[in-house]
Image 1: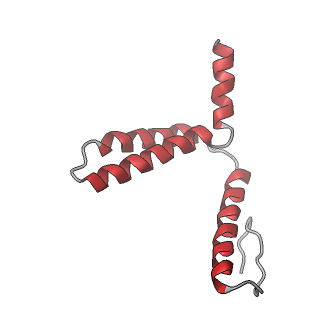
Image 2: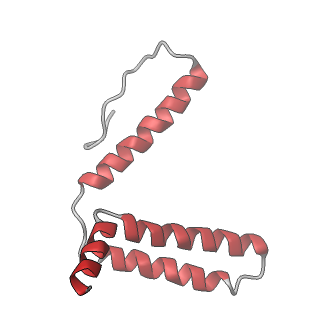
Length: 101
């Protein structure tokens, strides 16, 4: 059974089992990325993701364990990168800087 927006995959494959599982996970990830690229942006989506990333980075300094700090900092950095590079995010920032300068 396939969901809307995801490509259909063949039921059987001639590839070995370990290669098929790696290729299956790669095609699943590609399908998720393609679905995310096709969906329309929500108003203020990048600002919300940026705010969550900054909040995680700030809270990472208050974590008691080193592992907690690393996980929160990595997640916060990833969210900030997602906010900057999401659908045209970097291009929008570059256009804004070009208009100001």
